[in-house]
Every structure is written in C-alpha cells, then in structure tokens.
Length: 117
Length: 116
Image (cartoon, rainbow over all chains, first blue to last red; front, side):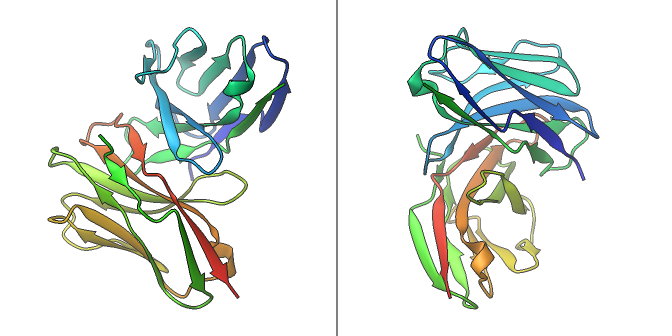
C-alpha cells in the first residue's frame, strides 16, 4: 500500500533555532500534502494544505512565516519551524493525497515529536 | 463552528464486548466523506473505515462497522469483540466535497480503554 515516510521521528532543539521535518511519499505521487499539529490528548489541528508546485494555504491563526511549507516535488514536502520556542513543542504529522486516489485515499506519516528547550 | 463532534473523551469496555464510539458532524455540502482513525500511543494514524455520503449501506471492515444515520448527521463507530490491542485514541474525521484535495477535519477524539 501507499507509504509516507516522515523524518525525523523525534527531535529536540534549542529555543530560537529552526527545525525541518520531511515527508516523502515512497510509492505514489502526493499531489496534495496536509500538515497537522497535535498537542497531548488533543485532536489533530490542520495547519496548512500544500499542492505540488504551489504556495501552501494556511489555516486561520497559523503563522505562515513561522511554519514554512515547501512542496517542490510530487514526492517530498517539508515543514520548517523557524525560530522555535517551547510553545511550538508538539506532535507534527503529515498526510498525503494522490491525484487519482479514491474517496478515502489519505496516507499519514508516522509523525514527528518536537521538543523545544 | 465545530464540524465534527465526539462527546466521549474516554470510554471503557470489557474485553470481548462491543463498544460504540459516537460522532456527529455538520455540513451543508451534499457530498462528503466520513472516516474513523485509530491512534495508538506511538502516534501513527491507522485508517479504520470510510463512509461516503451517498453510500446506501453502512460500511463494515472486519470488527469495525459504521452506523451511518444521515438524517441525524451521526457516524458512530462500532467495534465488536473488543481486544486489548484496541486500547487507543479514536478519531472521527470528515472531508467536505469530493474534490481530490479535500482536507480532513478531525473530532476531539475518544480514548478507549479495553479491560481484561
């Protein structure tokens, strides 16, 4: 089946530094990528939607200058958390859609646990 | 406005018994899809079952079935013969419209604990 590889699985960074999270679709072309953030015991909150070759569409309240999303190819999308602060500590997870996917064709990455110290 | 609502923050069920997890939704779009995912402590999202708004029959996948009541806008998940490995967070999600890039919106989740 379709697989999305997400790296790193976990990362600890110092406050003020930037962190890049990658999601790669291994056996299909991800025309659309969704990025979510999840705090402990809470729901997945959609941060942004990106289509290959286009600028990402951010959800209301998400700082586009802080959470940079790049979807330059059909198999790779990245989320960069810039100038990270402790409040950015969270679980980040991506979800990819293939162009010809059926009604339920969403493939999730395994997630990245970010801790900012 | 909350579009997907799960009103049970936590549920307990005895092993081998059935359990129903509630989900209600709100949309004015006649075309939509409803999903259930399982999220164990590892964080991965495991797809369980899907119901399209035009599907005439309730979806079933092994021990999982979706009780789709369109008029009530509910899409409850029924897990039969619960197993200890079913202990996890369960999320209901909705995709509005049927375009290829439709985003998924998730409910608050229900934490299911299966007792031996």
